[in-house]
Image 1 (cartoon, rainbow, N blue to C red):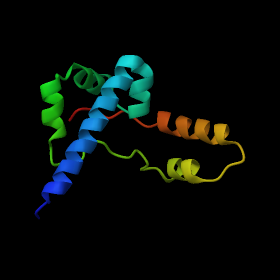
Image 2: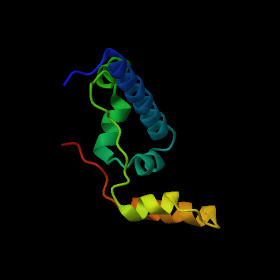
Image 3: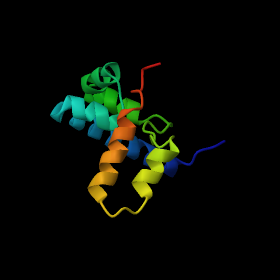
Length: 106
């Protein structure tokens, strides 16, 4: 399967934006960043310690580095369901996400 040059450029752009967001979230507030990203302490350590060259090289992968954490129907439906109280829906989704295990480096 051949991936077009444009698609690879777009993947690189998304990956680089995601990695930079990860690093910023983790540097600003590590525990909250780990929670929001759904990553473990070990993955957070790796992400924060990446040099610029390593970040760019990793972003140049032909694989999408981020993934949706909506594997659970309850989380997805909570986030998309129209609710009278938006704060309650957001809190409920956060509780469901907090119950998921953090990703481990494999």
